[in-house]
Structure formats: structure tokens, C-alpha cells
Length: 457
Ligand code: ADP
Image (cartoon, rainbow, N blue to C red; front, side):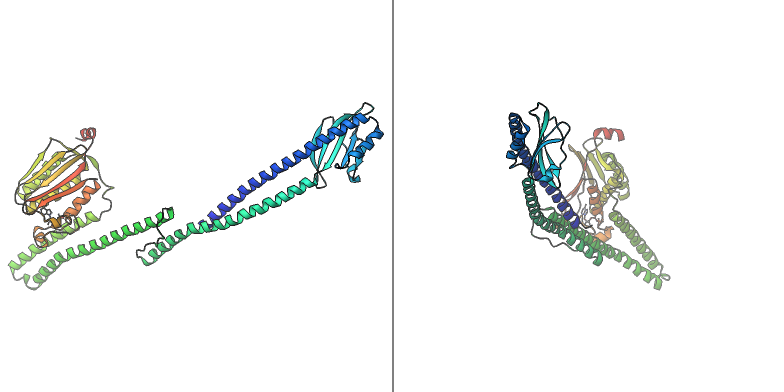
């Protein structure tokens, strides 16, 4: 069953139910009110007749008296204790066939005989001879029945008058709700079929949930489109980046094939070039794999990491490899950040590697503690980065000086990886740089809780 039919069915059934309850209540209250009035009137009449009969005394007078009261009444009779009618006065002989019942109690009730409602009252009375009898007064309620029937028709017509517009309104409402959903489904199907991004055509801006749904869908499409474009750009850049080393390798391999075997100096140069390009490619592919890994956040092993110790250790072996001075300056002997140790080390290596590559002078690592954060700055006094390039250096494959980057073995991916690592740690990576004066890369990470740090330290 479609949503439209469900909404429609639900609203209609609900309305019919409510109408039934209201109509039944009105009908029942009205019936009670009318029959109550009739029974009250019958009571007055019955008591009056009983009084007059008591005063009249003889049976002959009783017959006459009852005839006199018969005008608005269908039947009056006196029933003895054996339930036999003693005196009967009736307009219609059919009434006389009704079975008489003696009642020692005064009762008034509505009974139905042959499809017609009657009010029947029974009043105990003392006959002329002193015996106790029951005076039975029966009056027809056909006028009440007629009024009730009219009421029934009025209620039915009124219900139909209410039901019909509500039925149509329900259909319109269901259409109003379902149409945007249908349009969403159509667009999704089209996207699925054609494999292209497509947005919904939204009506005038409104605050309703259906507009919000469409708007969210369109925003989602924008994000997907952006990611897709980035992905495509990444593939393009990656292929472009891989093309250069492959061309170099191909060139040297061709040279080797032609003359290499006979010229030892060419052989050595080619093998050297092929080797260094292969190393470059290996680094590039490793970095690309790292960036393409979507599980980066899920696999983090977050714990309290002593940043001072990590910097000391890392700078020790980098100092040895690059044969360049690296100083670690910390506010205290141990500063704990909440981080994944291996990723933090990787981040530090990227920043130190850049600093060492683009600077010949000593490198400084400054570690400071703030209220909730820990900051780590890698400061060099190297070439610096021009202001217009600063916004781009975290982009994939971006290099300030393309020609020099090749000489330094740079891939343009290091800082994008660094940024990604900082992002998954909910931290910040800032850069300050001045051409000719040097650069300062500052990483800010959440601080580890003291107790936790104590446990892990
Ligand atoms: P690469 O592998 O080329 O170093 P990165 O993403 O690490 O790639 O850096 C991007 C560019 O930013 C580099 O090509 C370089 O021009 C510039 N850069 C990064 N760090 C520094 C630094 N400490 N000093 C000067 N320039 C830098």
C-alpha cells in the first residue's frame, strides 16, 4: 500500500470513527431526553387517574372515568393481582390483546410493540372494594419515533457534508506530501540509471519538513559532487605525478637497451637514476595510499603521549640522518597530549623533514602547554613560503617551487597528510612564514587528562 493510500485511509477511518461516536452520543442523549419527558408526563397523568378512580369508588364509574381520560392515551386498564384486566378502556382493540401484568410497584418504562414505541406506566391503587390493583396506562410514542428518525437523517446528512470535503482534503494532503517524495525517488532513480549527479527542483523556500528534505538532499548532492571532483582531481594529479618518474625510467631504460651495455659510465648513471625514481615512486604511492585510506579515524589508538619524549627521540635519529642541528625546547619535562603515538610521530617527521629540506640552519621544536591543549611548533630559518602560497600548501600535490621540489624529492603530499592527521585528532595545524626568514608550523592537540597521563606514563 502506498503512503498516499495509507494517509488517506487513516484520515478517513479516523474521521468516520469520530463522527460515529459524536452522532451516537447526540442520538442517545436526545432519545433519553425525549422519552424522559414523555415518562414524566405519563406519571402525572397516571397518578391523576389513580386519584380520581380512588375517589369514584364503583367499577361502573371507573369505566366511564377511564373513557373520559382516553383522549391523549392509547389504553388505560385496571389489572388485578392475578394479572387479569378488570376494567379496560382503549382506542384500538389491538391494545386489549397486550398481556396484562400486575405490578405492586409504581413503574414507568418505554417498550416496543410491533415496531412502535410506547410509554407504559403502572401505579398501584386501592379499588372500591378495598382490594389492591394495578392501574396500567399506555400511551404511544410514535411522534418521538418520528422526531428521532428526522434527527437520524439530519445527523447522516451532516456527517456526509463533513465527510465529503474532508475526504477530498485528505486526498489533496496526501498528494501534497507524497509528490515531493515521488520527485525525490524519480531523481534518485535517474541518478542510479545515468550515474550522474542531479539535484531536486525545489519550490519556493519554506520551513516545512518536505522542503528541508529536498534541501538536505541537494546539499548532500553538492558534497558528493565536490568529493567526486576532488577524487577525480586526485587521480589526475596522481597519474601526472607518476608520469614523470615513469618517463625518466623509460628514457634511461631505452638508453640502456641501445648503448648501455657498451658504455659503463652510462650504465652507472642510468641505474642510479632508475633507482632514485623508483624510490620516489615508492614514496609517492605509499603517501597516496595513506591519503586514500578511509579508515584513518577508526584505527586510531588514542592515549596519553609524552610529546617531549617523542620529539627528543625523533629528532635524535633525524639529526643523525640529516646531520643538522635540531633543538627541543619544552615548558616542562613531560607534556601529555591525547593522540595516536605512531600518527603523531609521522606528523612530526613530515614537519621536520620539510624544515630540514628547506633550511640549512638549526631547527627548533617548541613544546608548550595551555589549559586544554598542547602545542608543538617546528621552527626553521630557511627559505620561507610566499604569502600567496600559504593557503595552498596543505592541498594535495601542491609545491611552491615545482622545479626545486623534484630535486628535494618532494611529492607535495606531506603537508596534506600532516593536515589529515591533525584533523583526525581534532587538532589544528597553523603556519607562519616569511620568505627568507623561515617558517613556523604549529600543531595544537587536545591535552590528555592528568590521571590518564599518569597511568600511561
Ligand atoms: P613536499 O613533499 O614537496 O615537501 P609538502 O606537502 O610537505 O610537500 O609541502 C608542500 C610545499 O610547501 C613544499 O613543496 C614546499 O614548497 C612548501 N614547504 C613546506 N614546508 C616548508 C618549509 N618548512 N619551508 C619552506 N617551504 C616549505
